[in-house]
Image 1 (tube, rainbow, N blue to C red):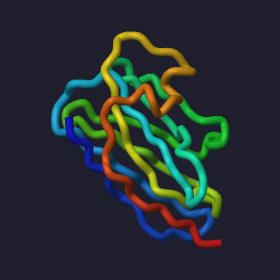
Image 2 (cartoon, one colour):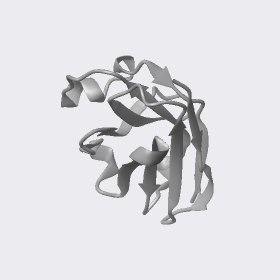
Image 3 (cartoon, rainbow, N blue to C red):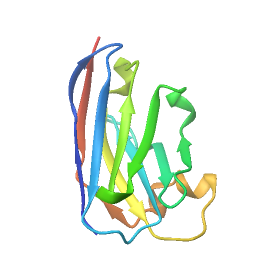
Length: 125
């Protein structure tokens, strides 16, 4: 499956941005967003179970982001509000196929089989 992320850009502190990730086919059970800031490791942001729409969030998001999906379009979204300078990063979407998951598994980059090219989000202070 190929993943195409889009929607990144430059936004001021406190602003909002919506990222999209379109999948070429439906061969996964879970999709997620990760981000990587310069000089830092890739970190989990949010994920969603595709059949049930259950969301998972990183603690650092603090309720500012909302993940959703559109089954008919095989597309996942990440609505980011109250953006902070420290949210600046390249955001990657990823997916994996497994009927079993856990909170710990869904937060690990190694769990995901498919990755899209990142989209850059820059938050100006």
